[in-house]
Length: 214
Image (cartoon, rainbow, N blue to C red; front, side, top):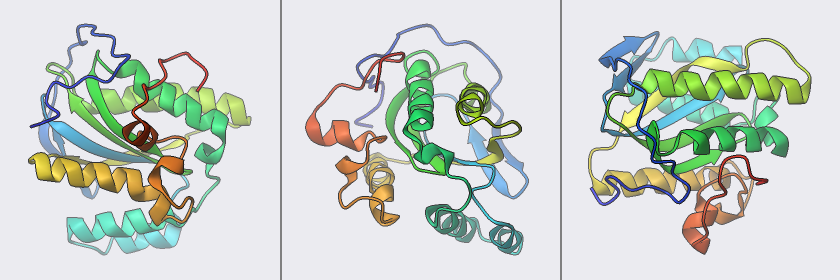
């Protein structure tokens, strides 16, 4: 693949921590593929991003593609408190994504929406996808709860993941990630969305290093 072993500027190059990837497994209504070395497209959302009516409809769907479309439509509708629409919270999530780049995964693309996050990564050997998600969610939940003055679970436990099959699929997923704010009616072009890798793709910029003001 064209992006294989690619590292964004700012990658730490640190040896990955080792845990136990699970391969194919299912949790609740979603299948997951937790295999090192794959390029994975991941979507995770805030706990209140989908209302009860959408969740009830999901329980009636047998087709994974239909479930995914229903979830995506529900998230783009802007339900919930949308804490990630606050620039302070979006910066926290982006900082977390940058932090693991080069040590647990290679960060290829991302987009932080008001109530959910899309990420495209290449998982490094010896690292499980579940551990990566746990790291993102645990640290950002603590920081965001402090910023907005709340307590309790911030993120929905479940998440979507899809492994990338080939270069054509890779390009399509990157386009989808970058186009999400346009599709949701938040901006007119992908690069206008502040918390997305689209602004680097289009402008040829270098991502800010973790810890710097974004």
